[in-house]
Length: 155
Ligand SMILES: [Zn+2]
Image (cartoon, rainbow, N blue to C red; front, side, top):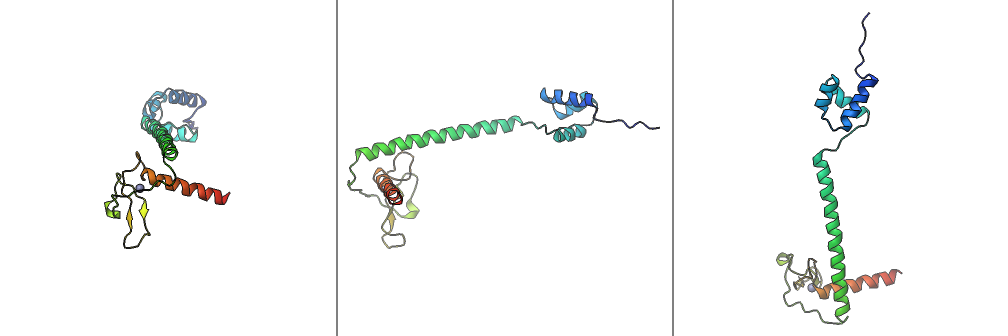
């Protein structure tokens, strides 16, 4: 009679869990228990025991740090906008002395469209934008007012 040797005796499963918790690699666990590395990997996945690698943990931390930075920037920009809105009168003229074409647009130029897209004289404002934002202060004020109007109409 041939005794079929069971790979995963309850004792070995316990050892597997302990070694896994201790952070041993699959290879080390296999050597310690006396089974193949593939057996360890297979059993871990059947037990739903997965481990995040240091790389994955780092990536996750980085991501949440980036989100926090984004939120901080958004708050800062909102404060800037509010300051502009409070300081400048509603009907202050917006002088776009440096208007530019689509090709000339850059991070350093307000991209508020002037006249109708497609028209011969169509161009962009081109003024220096408010810190880190796409529009100059005057055009931010316009955008803000347009937003309030739309909300008032909807409401
Ligand atoms: Zn502008």
